[in-house]
Length: 188
Image (cartoon, rainbow, N blue to C red):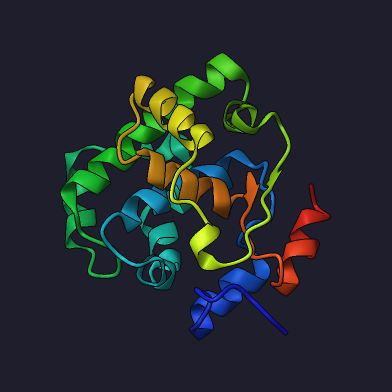
């Protein structure tokens, strides 16, 4: 059984085999991924995955309404939490991003409606033959990044946005010889 080469540890294999590329249309889950992808900046995805349950506990299960009203006392609490990545800029960005997401929900009806419009509402099915074929950013991730930043999002550059799009199934970047390529493609 072939799988994408990056899935080379137990944590990454589980994530690859069960989650990566599966289309998500739940606002809370989408928000979780945009925050976690931002937390990954400069780090490995495996590091973030290992801390994911701690992030859920520390960040009110990624409820944007709860996060949007965090005060400095909560920021101090998060900076002292050894189970998450303790980066003030990333933590403050998560709080600001929650506020921005709530504004997007008001304007577009849901975060789901907002983000999926950047791929026309349907997952893009790429046909990557090798890891070198997988892009770090695309026209769509550039557009999403630019628009998110216009609405006040931080840690939402084109590469982070493309990783987000891959994670939530907006694009299928499983290699064509990966056993998940067809499975994930059928979910489109």
